[in-house]
Length: 136
Image 1: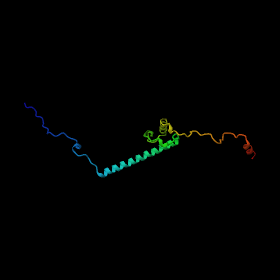
Image 2 (image 1 turned 30 degrees about the vertical axis):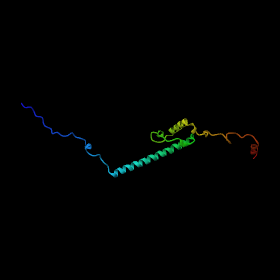
Image 3 (image 1 turned 60 degrees about the horizontal axis):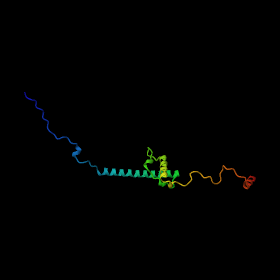
Image 4 (image 1 turned 45 degrees about the vertical axis):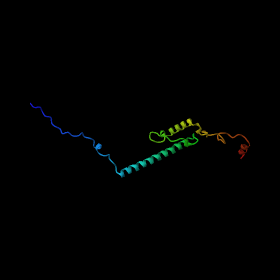
């Protein structure tokens, strides 16, 4: 008896990905220019946001009043909350840290009102002026 003859399959080269055999894809000059312009606009916007955040942190520091010079506190991304906005509590904590590290930056201005001059809650002392004023 004869043995079965296996079918002959033509030998082909293993398939290679198309991208390996072709050159890398290139983009048109207009498209590349558009991408670069878009990226430049985004960098400018990001710079403006950082500058606005720096001014806001400086305003918070001035309003706090504990620093001699509010510009001593520099903006940091750690001062942002989850929404990307400046968190006043984090700014206050940063001021605390700065004053702990550099106490000479603390303002010498008193934080509480100083009781000087005429006060309304003190009764008039009897004297010549009060006697004359009562007669008028």
